[in-house]
Amino acid sequence: MEIPKLYQDYFKQNQFETLTKIQDAVYMPFKEGKDLVAMAPTGSGKTLGFVMPMLETLVPRDGLQVLILEPSQELAMQVRDVIQPLAKLVDCKVQALTGGANPTRQLKKLREKPEIVVATLGRLNELVEPRKVKLGKINTVIVDEADEMLNESKIESVRSTISQMPADVQMTFFSATGNDIFQDMHKWFGQEFLVIDQRHDTTYTAGIKHHFVDANNEFIKNAILRELAHNKKFLGIVFFSNSRSLHKTISDMNHNKTNFVALDSKMSSQQRKTALQLFSTKKVNLMLTTDVAARGMDIDDINMIINYSMPRDNNEYIHRSGRTGRMGKSGNVITFGNSHDMRNLQELVDADITKVYIDHEGKLSKKPVFDKVKRHDAPKENIKPKAKAKTDSKPKKRLRDQKNKGKRSFHKKQTKQD
Image (spheres, one colour):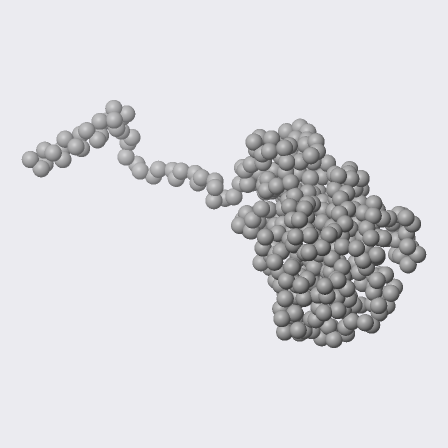
């Protein structure tokens, strides 16, 4: 279908020429009020896919009508920012409700009666309980990153939230990867869902190349990261599987005065916002993070994703790699590990994996130019101090005397006791 007239100027300003496949497939079923499960690759335009038909169902100045649930503060703010300029076209308002932000300010904004709320579950539940947010007139609920939002730890909270809405509320779920629960949605939510599955469409991920670097030692990994940080053409995210490994590398980067930012769930809302702003405006070209940034984050021109250690599964790899090569652009995904990890990675990823090296300018090379760490790259505490020169002026004993020293002393000791 053609771009709806309402959004033609927006598409032109953002240099979008046509609707993506998922936007086209979702538009009419969503607008007709059908319950949906929509899956499509990362970077294929899913957010705009649900925003466009959603806005056309709103009634201005008629209170809260749409709730969008997001798994993280960053993603909630990003989706709000996408909606804001488009909401003005239909004279409607959007507000984000996230943890870490000032609740008093959020309550004040709620008095302006936004038609759309984008929220994280924790903050939403805090405001729903005292009835600061009323869900009784919601027409549509959109669960973004649905594979994550319907995992074991969150699904009951999502169901509880939806149960407070009208019985005929439109339920829509969007995701880049699948979830076993998607097969039994009618059991969990009491409705039949139209499933739109475009996960195997490689149109929007064709520009991503997958690489492997034989680097199983943290000294080598960190030395490579330092080289990349000094490459002005590099803009990349390094993913860590846990906070302990992340903070250990942060300490090393700080020790070596490397320019970078970090993003971690333990950081305050303001710290996370500042880190993202520095990275997205390219004032810093290296970001270290856990999977808090793996989902949905859309930052222009990221050209490299690095897995500091092997991803746990295919879904994790897909979400991480989806931060680069978005909307058909080119990008590189590099995974650190050993030869055993290389075999596992090939089984994990349905794509060709190329073994590469990183040269001293932070460029990819097929020749082994950076497979060993220089001595000065290793932390000082791991370099053994030189032995102190002996100042004893006594003449060295002959080798024979040194060998017999123990025997003689033992004999003397026995004789003295006798």
